[in-house]
Length: 383
Image (tube, rainbow, N blue to C red):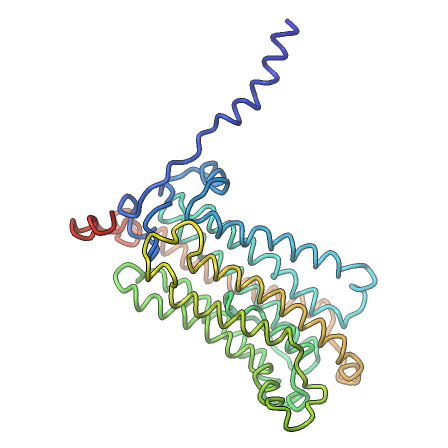
């Protein structure tokens, strides 16, 4: 009996090790809604179970690197949040904008990781996963925008969807990095309300861009790129102004001087935008970069690096400008911050829910959910 018990004990690890990894498919074997330009192989079954999706993250598919390049940074940013969020640090209202920024900075890579992991459960699940991914990106920019009010320069309800492109610049920049000549100006006062409108507009555009994706892929791509690029340009206006002010060193920048991390952040953001729009290198060599090296993987890496450099730049501004900012108007309290964040979160969730409800009402044979059969010539070319 003792020997039998021992065999039973070892049976469970053996069963776990005997789990079969999901079968991988080529592009012509999955509905069009799952296709990625230039990616010919490594697709997961479009009706995978949740367990299959989790297991697939431990085998080499065309999504594996996408999953891990955002799962691991989630823990890095969580570590930074915990390291900075000591009781003494949290007690100072001056640090509140940074902590609010770090919360969605932890959330957006985790949401992206989940979206890439579970997007192969069904066509509907794929769209909903990315709706939620866009929502997490919206909260990321929202956390950054809230700091305009915390700096005391404006009233309003901030938020902004961006994407990895915007890298969440509006919140910390408005709190710690606003140009000296902009403080309490009309532009400063309108910055948060405009960013709130950007949030809902860009969340809506990002979600809507998935609907014409099959019939008008070029329009869909342009719409999504615009939804990501516009908030980046708007949110980084303070940084662009400071860069122009200090360009060439013709005069002393004073407190508007930029740290090198601001430059690295901008470079990573621009690289992210280029990779997202150009789909290089896989567009030039279809099938060569299916598993490692395609543009979305590089996009993830640049986005995370951009967030890291932005955090370092904000910490530098926060330290060097503290004495100057201390003589400005007092900061808002935690209650006002939570209320503003809650309103923006609810608004963005409502947009996501509306698009999800519209998606769920669509019939199963709808092209958005099933795609259309491949023509024989195209199928032969992709094989």
